[in-house]
Length: 303
Image (cartoon, rainbow, N blue to C red):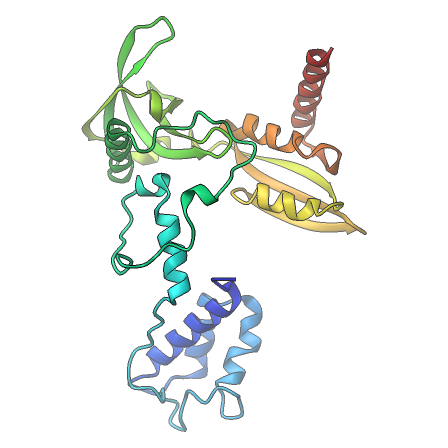
């Protein structure tokens, strides 16, 4: 495991406590406050105790000041740097122009061709095309700066059309391997594939507060998982991008509630169906009916 979530959190929390105790005595109240804000809930039972006089971490002296004399520093290990360098070779990540300072002479841990994607369409966006990159970054900048844009895109009849819209966010579809722009045009929410945009221009600004509620139509679906052949692990991995809550209801059976946005509903249904009998949709009824309809369509296509 390259990055350890729990221990990493402990290190950063203790580092902040030591930074606060560099120049003056640190109180128990301050320690508890830092632990509550930075660490896990159960950490309040461990960190303050271990930093006390009877604890196992002699990092505070009798005057409750840090025994170190400099601010804590936790540089990346060589393996961490190599892992980051490998991620930054992904052309999708490169679209966002991440800072690679300090990784110039680092050998990547793996190459892009070492990764194999399953259940993904082969006609993804042209991430290394110069025109695509220029359009993507212009849209990204407009989203960050709350700027309106004019985009030119093709219609089904073979013609092209300019529209003025307010970009809200960029989304990525793992199944399609494509980015899409969520925007508001003439008061309505629109989804446009970035790869279909021919030109893009920035033209002024807009008020994001007016459209915030419109583009965040949150919905939930309740799933029942029978944990056979590591089904639970596969479900949690597959739906890792969604907000979710899980509970055990009986031996090897779990209930998972996923929260998603309306425009992702079709993608979500396709992913759910890919699990077969290991996954059952318990509600809401409208979602269950759509799943039944899709299964009926698949049966008809099979005959």
